Amino acid sequence: PFKLHSDWVTKLMYLNHSGCLVTSSMDSTLRMVDLERKKPKWTVDDHMRGVYSFDFCRTYNFIASCGVERQVLLWNPFTGRSVGALHGHSASVQDVVVSETENQLLSLATDKVIKVWDIRSHKCLQTITDQSVYWPENRISAMTHDPQRRTIITAGTKLKQWYRVTKENVGIRPITTAIYNSAFRQVVAGDTDGSISVWSIDRGESVFTFTDTHPDSQLSAMVFDSSQRRMMTSARDGSVKMWNFNNGQCLKVCEGFGDSEVSCVTYLEEGPNRFIAAAGWNRKVCIWVDGPSSKEPVHHCLEGHTDDIICVEFCPPSIVATGSYDGKIMLWKIDGVVKSIMNPPEENSRSIDQKPVEQLLYMPHRGKILAALCADANVYFWRLVDTKLMYTLKTGHSALGATMCTNEGNTVLYTGDALGFVYKWDLSSVDWRRENHAPTTQQIRQMRTERVSINNGTAPLITGKVGFFYGWRAHKQALVSLQHV
Image (tube, rainbow, N blue to C red; front, side, top):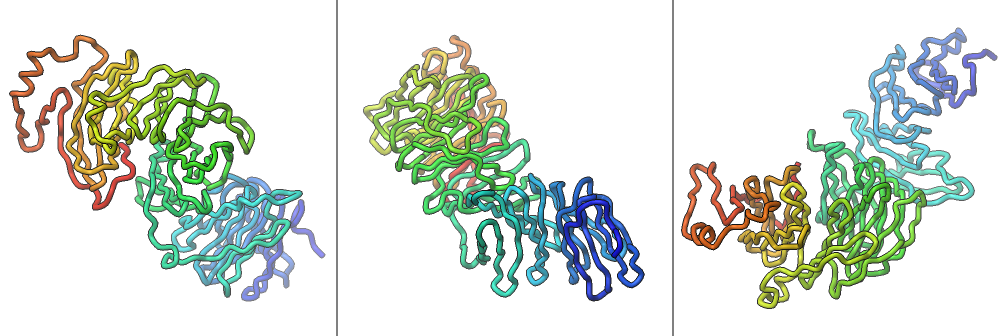
């Protein structure tokens, strides 16, 4: 016997082609030993802390190791020099398995997250989160890969198989919603099957995907919290969940909404208090406290709508705006007090199909304005200070199911419709904070008679106080989400 490490040896592997033994230890080293000479050929000490496991890939000729750190390190087996690292886990990586037949590397973290990596490009292909609860220890203790059945097998208090599904079997699912994360510069898209894909906006590549967010139900809405590190999702079965979108781990389940469809969800922040709010076909706004518990009951509900709620918008510091199918817009305090009820003008002259409020958008830099996009393709701009209707923008969209967004300074408004068209509007000259900004009768007559033509696409066509820049067809099918980056 001979001593190689100063701490617990975590794994041994004999390499037939070289007659060497590779060892790892909690002393943060990885060694290759010549068994004939009983001397180490090289020692890797780049791990800052203990090494849990490693694996060898003969086809691509490298050794992958993992430990207390949150990355997988790759080494040249002849020299022990580093050849790369795989970053993406948010917890210690306890095991790595190389699948040479699939050209993939599997890594298992202590938070029950499995990542599938492409060996050739070092890119994460998929993130799998085991949401099962094991007793008495809620952890995965081991992992292996079955190349014949093309499955991943994990072991905790029981065995579990993860079957590989090809793209032909999965198919292309329609996207139900998409949101942009400015902190990580990533786009997160959710489809009807409950799968959520994270894309890099700089590289245009998929970062990772996690599935089964809402089993047996269709994803309906998504939103980030104020830190943009956690994401709330809702589904048609009334479920609301909070996720770590970086690894697909479910952090919280909000209970008590019922079986009705959740059509919208948002995150509220009032001083030191944090809340999650969701609304839908139960005609109530359910609010949960964002506490440390993994399961949160409903804290209180905002009741007052007489029809299904379609959209919700938080207007800092303490106003919650909701829009319903009957065209009613309600302003609430977070504690449930109704501040105001607003209805677009000529409410009785509009048909039932034209009344639904499709989306609400808060614009603090335009005089604390709440923009309401209705099914009649008009955008109504309300001033929250006195709930006064400041302007009605007739977008001219010819299809229902419209959506809209604005830039950070609220100088531009984008509107889209079910035919895939996007229009850009100029709000830079609008300032609804001043009472005297409203046009006089003479100014209105002058605006109706004057026309400003577009000169090579540079001069906006003035429509009242909002200028139309240009429009284009971005998609051939309906737009479900529109955000300014």
